[in-house]
Image 1 (cartoon, rainbow, N blue to C red):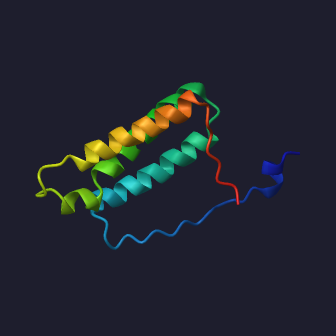
Image 2 (tube, rainbow, N blue to C red):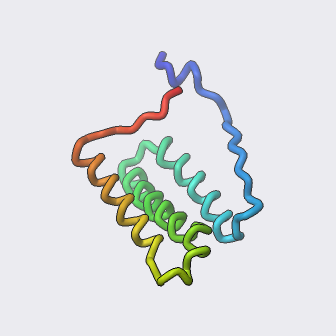
Length: 106
């Protein structure tokens, strides 16, 4: 029996303060949680790849919809969301190239 079988719980409650989120941001958070669960549990190749791509697209949407970019729209028309996405992709590409896998085990 694997360690995952013996330590698996039926549900996990995640609390998220939504007081400053727009309805669109809230829907996106819910969709990301659902997509993440699907990616982690699927045993179908097509679903795994398609949902992984959709998850990354949703992450990009989160970055674009961040409050940070709203506060700076009048500050010299700097495309902060685009820059943040480009920076994120550079870091992700470097991790993929170097085969670095980040783990967050406590």
